[in-house]
Length: 602
Ligand SMILES: *[C@@H]1O[C@H](CO)[C@@H](O)[C@H](O)[C@H]1NC(C)=O
Ligand SMILES: *[C@@H]1O[C@H](CO)[C@@H](O)[C@H](O)[C@H]1NC(C)=O
Ligand SMILES: *[C@@H]1O[C@H](CO)[C@@H](O)[C@H](O)[C@H]1NC(C)=O
Ligand SMILES: *[C@@H]1O[C@H](CO)[C@@H](O)[C@H](O)[C@H]1NC(C)=O
Ligand SMILES: *[C@@H]1O[C@H](CO)[C@@H](O)[C@H](O)[C@H]1NC(C)=O
Ligand SMILES: *[C@@H]1O[C@H](CO)[C@@H](O)[C@H](O)[C@H]1NC(C)=O
Ligand SMILES: *[C@@H]1O[C@H](CO)[C@@H](O)[C@H](O)[C@H]1NC(C)=O
Ligand SMILES: *[C@@H]1O[C@H](CO)[C@@H](O)[C@H](O)[C@H]1NC(C)=O
Image (cartoon, rainbow, N blue to C red; front, side):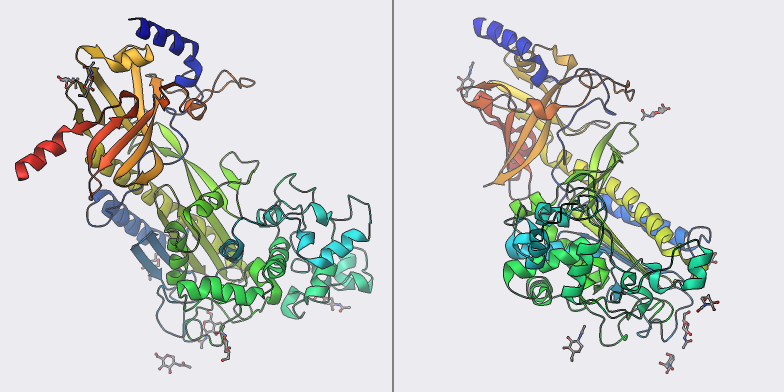
């Protein structure tokens, strides 16, 4: 009695960390921990009805899009969609526009081996190359350490914050995450070479001095690519946009400088490093930094110039999107990230994180991930939602639009490559097609993977777990995240009520996977809450009286060096739970169902 009395007192004093049920800005009755609420599903095509259903819904939807002239011009827009888990291809769907001919699709067949330009998805591969070679080791280094020209500019000592970039404040991480405050481009978007004196006068623009007109870069395709010296000189002359780390501003230039820094760190050319650490390791047969020698395997919407197929971006290739690739190669890239085949799990977890917010609550920026935060129904048809983060990179170049998406919580991803002529009337076609098709994939497949994970968790973990003197029930319930822990008894004692001080019927205890697994054991942590209704109301100025802060209460209370929320399942080689240890009890409870089934079998 005394112990229990003490426990009650402790819990009462510690109510805030253990019970984050103080009022209500969340969209769900539960406050889960950030990240997956069930282990990622493993048995996809064969055993999960949800994935199969999602794929057929998606294929129907793709066909509807192709037949809907208000959102998709099927005469001119082509696409290739590859959907994958970390070890399987789940769907390869290609659509070849009806106007394609011998010169725009020389192979005569559009499939996952057709070469597209991938635009700014190149930036992601530049960062992947960096991490593959030097991991996270140099992220905090100032770029001046590795690009001596920039150190030289800094040493020249101009002190003019509104006109001069402070290169010694620009770190490798800032370059990789749009945090350096740099201008977007040198010369790419510069009208100086396109506008003559007459037009300038009409547009009320002043005449330009000769030295203000770019002489290298890619404007109007007539300029040669810049040499390294020219580019850095020009980059240094451009005005800074903002101070370092102040607000993210999308910069192409930053990635060219990042590639130079990587050359400085490794002492090798970017092309060689990219070839050896990415292309060769993943055996990417049709991915390159420069235009392929022949158009034979490519898609060229329009002609080679207007589509930008043949535009060689030189040293800007890593940044502005010079790279060429296919659905099959991009899938291998995505799978290599999810399965840790180049980067180890710890580096990968560090990479798949945000670096900064944006002004949109639902969008964050990583290196250089564009992170979209979805409010995903907790289960099919539920009004309750939870946050799912998609790690994406978008790219646009000439007639090409590209989307690369990973859902790390579910171990799946997709790549969408679009080609469409750049003629004026159709200039927005690829971007529109990209968002329509991208949304069709996420709305069908994120839900499908959520459902598959939920079904698999119910199959693997739900049950009654018993020992000589203790029993508890694990279940999965619609409208709620995670595994529900209920009916936890020892003899006639209600353990959950004793531990929490909340009557059993009002306690809502849920277990979430902790990404710790070894030797047939999987770790979960419990979040103990008081059952309640969800609310979406949020009062202006109310900050501390609302919120969803269960992470602040994890492992908050211990008994003999073990936390009250510490649970470990034992699983068999098929992933099915055979036992559960609420570690605080120093007991292991057998799964009644699995035990009975295996007894019957023998
Ligand atoms: C293109 O869309 C039209 C409807 O706008 C449809 O009739 C036609 O079958 C579609 N073409 C292809 C190749 O799917
Ligand atoms: C175009 O395709 C047709 C039909 O496949 C083929 O007979 C013809 O030789 C091709 N022409 C060129 C220029 O490749
Ligand atoms: C300037 O460009 C306009 C539009 O292309 C053209 O009509 C005009 O002749 C040009 N003027 C000169 C001086 O080159
Ligand atoms: C183009 O051909 C040259 C010479 O055969 C070769 O070295 C180069 O790798 C090829 N480029 C691409 C992108 O395939
Ligand atoms: C093929 O189609 C493109 C774009 O529609 C067009 O510019 C080109 O002239 C066509 N080529 C042939 C050989 O028909
Ligand atoms: C979701 O909310 C709507 C509108 O408030 C309500 O009509 C519906 O019954 C709710 N559905 C569920 C599953 O709770
Ligand atoms: C419950 O069972 C466990 C395991 O057999 C034992 O160690 C423990 O002493 C028992 N506790 C009570 C209160 O009976
Ligand atoms: C709770 O568990 C006890 C012991 O295993 C069992 O007798 C009882 O039926 C369970 N109650 C519920 C509501 O599941």
